[in-house]
Structures are given as C-alpha cells and as structure tokens.
Image (cartoon, rainbow, N blue to C red; front, side, top):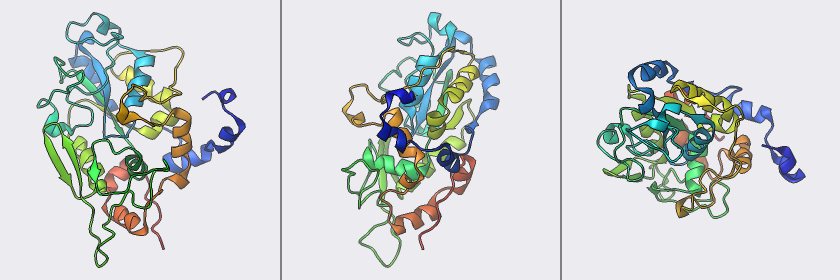
Amino acid sequence: VNLQDLDASTISQLPTWENVISQYGDHPIMYGLETCQPYRETTLPADRMLGPAGLFNTGTNLLFQLMKDNCKIREAEHSTSHREPARNGIRFHAPWGKHNPPSTHRYKNVAKMFGEGINQTAFFPVVMIKDPYSWMGSECRHNYQTWWEHDFDVDGSGGGVGCPNLVNKEVLEREEPVEAMVPYPLGWVYYESLVDVWNKWYEEYEEQTFPMLQTRFEDLLFHGEEVTKIACDCVGGVFTKQFRNIEGSAKENGMLVHKGANGLVKAMLQYGNPRNRLNGMTDRDRRYASESLNGDLMSKFGYSAPPLPT
C-alpha cells in the first residue's frame, strides 16, 4: 500500500504490525510444499496449471489476481491442453469448481466457468482458508451460496444483531445450532451450523493426497509477495521482478454477487483489527463456536480461540 495515496484519517486507522502478529504470527503459514517437486516431476511444463480453491469469502479471487499479475508458467504459452487469456498457466479456479468439496466434485464435476476440457489431474490448487470467526463475519456481509437463518448485515460491520446466529435464539433450555445448507452443483449439503460448514469443508481437503498448497487469506493480505512467489516457484513458474499488489477489490468483475467486496486497504482495516473478529456474535454464539470448531484445524493454521465470555 502506498501511504502517499491515503488520507491522514485512513492512515491513523491502519493496524499496527503488533496487531497483525498478535492474531496471525509474524510469518505466513503454508502447507503442501513437499508436493511441489512430485507435481513438477509428473506434469509436463506445458500442462502445468495453478489456481485457487476455497470456501466462499476466503480470498480465492485475490489469489487469482496476484498470481495472474506476478507469475507466469512460460511453457503454458504453447500448451495444447489448456489456454488462459494471458497464456500464463494461471487459471481462475479449480476445474471442478473452486468452492466445491473435492471428494464429491473432483473428477465428477466440470465447472461451468472455465472448466470444460481441463485436465483435473494436471491442475495444482492453492487452497485458501480464513480465520473462522472472521469468515463468519464475511458470510454475514456476503453469504453467496451459504444459506442459514440470520439477519442480513446492513451496515457492513461484519455482523448485526442476528448474525452469524449460530444458536437458535428461540430455544433457551439448550444450545440448538442453526442449520446451514449449501447448494453445490451435484446436490445440496446440509450442515449442523455455519461453524460446521467451515469444519467439514476443510476437513475434506485434509483427507486429500493430490498435490496442493494450503495457505491463509490473512497471509495473502499481509505477506502477499512472499506467498505468491512460493506458489509460483512451486509449479516451476517465473516470478515478476516488480511485484504488483491489488489495491482495489479483487472481485471487481461486474458480477452482482461481488458487489461491495473489500479492497486491499479496507481489508487490512477489517482483518488487522482484532476488535472486528467477534462482530455480531452473542455470548451463546461464542461458546458454541469455541466448543464446535475443529481444534486441530485451528491449531494447524495458527488461529487462536478467543476467550470465552464471562
């Protein structure tokens, strides 16, 4: 971010590095680096492709834009198996659909957008994940294809009085989760709650054995150049000599579903401030989330559980 382009009020609100470190540590977290060499050894350079996969609201578009602008698989220019507008091997998303669970969709589904004719074995996904507490706030702002009973966030804060609404407010004698559902291309999937969506989706990727990288949205936000260079090197790409960040919204593609998506500075203000993490959550929501989130996933990706309400 070029501070000269920001006004004094915005600069004063930017998170301190201490705030960022307190939430996400001082270095990016990436898994799957051991799969890079096997991928390069088993996939011809001209056939190599990289692109994002991840739940809604986890930075998949940001990853695509950063990779497209800063990485090139040179041999892809002459590929006969795939072709991108920039002919660089960087694809918009996984050919089975970036938001779709891999066990039920890889090899079984062809994404309607840019999926036809793509060799799904040769595609190398970078799987994006986001702090589940922040992710639920993002879902309150833009739920995309996740459906559950909640009040829509009208002020953009990441949660209103009735969002994320993890526990049924009408039932007081027990903690009754609010069911969530997602209409994937091959059928609706019903989840115990919004927390369960995050758990189940990433648990499924934990079971996969094909080559991939996994990294956090927050690392792309605060360590964008380092993360994209590692991903580029992984598939044998050539990284730019002058890194280009995305200062506007990575979702500015004219699609109504992406209206109001965060730009880089706004995202830093949102996710760099730890006070925004629990926006909209009731005490019952916080207790349910603490008890129900997959602790192994939280630990693996460096997400700490907030203290329980007293």
